[in-house]
Image (cartoon, rainbow, N blue to C red):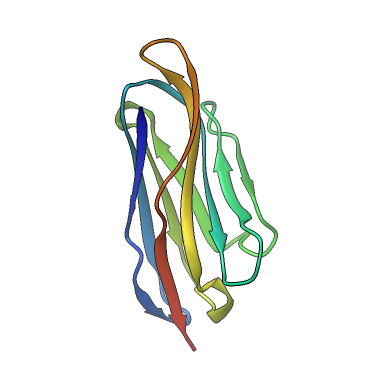
Length: 120
């Protein structure tokens, strides 16, 4: 079983910064792609940023130039540095990861979500 735990969600002012973290724990052998998604009430969950094992990154157009995703492979951790925050960034942010368990099975997991609220 693989568990993802996010942290770092908070209330921030527009123009401010927050840093989210997500750790994959449990029977993890290797983590491939890690990513951040976000969701607001009544809307579909949307991709914010992803990063592969080769550190290739992909960003939603709405966050390009403001958000940076990174990872620490040894710690099975991914980070999302969010700068120049806008009110429209307010959402629950979810971590996602896929990879292999110690038993050689593939996994794809979601975290429980962390709330980011940006006041204008």
